Length: 430
Image (cartoon, rainbow, N blue to C red; front, side, top):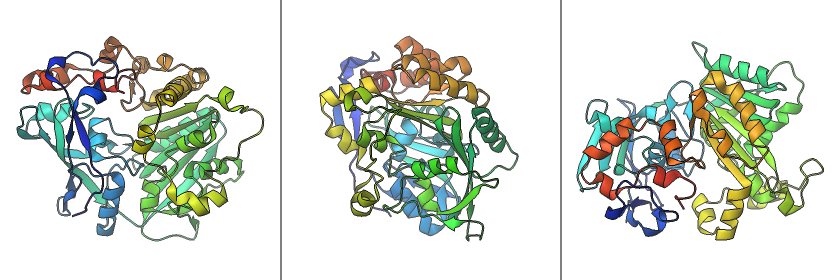
């Protein structure tokens, strides 16, 4: 039994809201907060290769499974993400082998609006089982999840393949992902539209003599994406190989919150994009006029990566996201909304190159709305990112047929909880 330290809240709607969209700034301030202190790993079944848990974080879960020689089949990279949030909020990472986080989930347990407890799976309450993922707590309170686990080994043998051409990178990424027997881990990081690194990894029990150990989880270590960027400067025929402890690899983007801390600490205008499995991650910060920084001339010392900072205060990283939100003033919130873009898009792999080119073009200006019509390419916007669509556009992007049916079937559901749109739209979810 792994004890959790954090407390979690679920937000319960008022009866008079019915199925209408929640008015601006209402949902978190006027709904009833219900404590859901279910923060334990309940069961690890090595025979059936499953784990049952509730609002456990990824960091807590990987620490529990590692000594048992097990790991989740899909591990989102940030320690602080909870199982419930990953199920209800789309997930955050994806796998070219297993799919999204929801695809490794075998059973859900929920408390419905009338207080009843129900379980659902592919064989029981099937409609509810398929409606739960991405539902943002608008069907009930998630109290237990059973997911698949896989055998784990000590290290990930990771190859770095730099590319100076978008077509080359996309072709390499696609070909590796579509192999009959692909690498276990495939990830791409783009640092500009024409420069990026494809990384290929596999679990191994022992280190080979073709690479060195890189314990990237050490708080004194340089942020992972900065290490990856250095490979762009290397003119080597053969890829660089490193051996990374498995848990360090799983949480490789935690200490820098992907590349967000660079922007938070520097106030710099940059554009990085990550590709892992099925999802593209786009982060843009456009605030040079506020800092006096010209992205084309000079640089500001990135003190989050400064050796002195890392060796003395690096253990403080990353700050709790909940703390950042709690201490954020309304003025800072408006500033981020105007100048900071965080978008994740789910697009078919055959449209990846075209999508990246669109992101590159549109993210050079303060425009999020113009990249939201990814539905034309059979794509989706990830719901935990900023959503600016109208209700009609949102319903066109996501098929609501099953969701609407389940909401009408569950007792008091429409009276107790708002629609998903009322919790994810940027202007109403505050």
